Amino acid sequence: MAAIMKFFFLDRDGFDVLHEESRGEMEQDESKVDIAVLKILARPGGSNYSYDYCLIESKEAGRSWSATEDHLSRPCAGTKNASERVYGAVHVGLFVQFFTTHRGILTPMSGRLHLRNDVNAVTTMIERMKRNPLPFL
Image 1: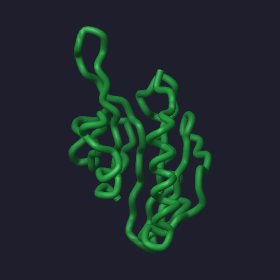
Image 2 (image 1 turned 135 degrees about the vertical axis):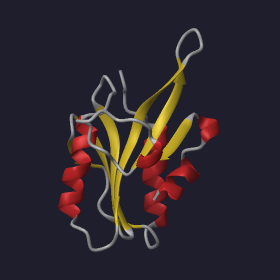
Image 3 (image 1 turned 120 degrees about the horizontal axis):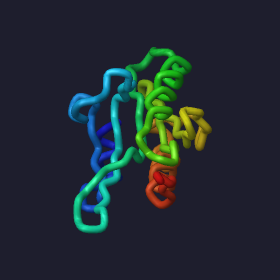
Image 4 (image 1 turned 90 degrees about the vertical axis):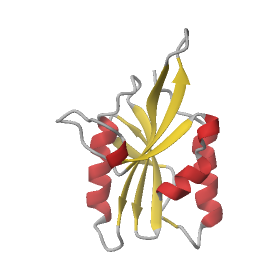
């Protein structure tokens, strides 16, 4: 899933896709997510900062879908975005489902899509997320 997101969310467009282990120090009470898509912006005066754009919980086939959704809701609720809104995705085996989240409440943007059989739908959802950034302030 990280490779798919890296294909769409490019560095040159101001994005960074990180596996959790490469995301750096996290506060002790902060829930971890498997993959994070960050948007990098420059403040007036030139210093860069990042904000959560899409958080992804990724599990191998056979894992509980509802437990994976529940786990995703925790880091989405703890996003540092001032708007408390972020895109989310649950990825289990070869299936993925996309969400918008506000304060950790997941609202589906799609049904469960198969990464091989529903390539056009997956591509459409990711492109939609790129074209329509959620407010972060």
